[in-house]
Length: 211
Image 1 (tube, rainbow, N blue to C red):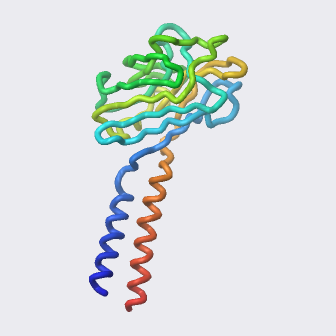
Image 2 (cartoon, rainbow, N blue to C red):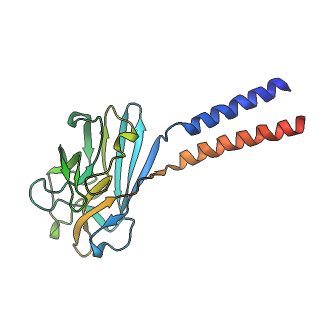
Image 3 (tube, rainbow, N blue to C red):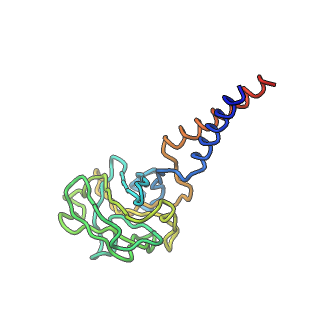
């Protein structure tokens, strides 16, 4: 019986240790804009997934929005984000759903959300709105030699991410930003936490029965 109790306790401790580890994926939301035509948030999500020593990004927009390129050359990024300990060479495998090609610039800008560490800009097949209608999500890319925490840095105007978008019906263009500090964990993180709590509860119950 004592051996079994020790085994259960060890399992619970392992589960709780896993819960204490950084989440393997987090989801930020685009929650802010100055474009009234976009209506109420949310405007999309930015999912960061730890993949070994790299972080994979996937950016999804609300169904009525597409990515777009507006303003003068490189004055607005398709996606702008902050990072520490990351170089231009670390950012690659950038693709969207419409076949555009992209490049990365430093710094990245996306008014009114300010200046960011990096900006992803459209290189070929770009659209500045109107009859072009922008280009569809998801936008995905990988940042080598990084961890999720490297991207939790605000821009000069208080945003963690910003995207240049167009409203599919109506043609309004402008930036959407993610200004919330606490990201939303992926469902798998919740499952892991519940498993750890359940294991601890089971061990506590068995100890009460044994006494």
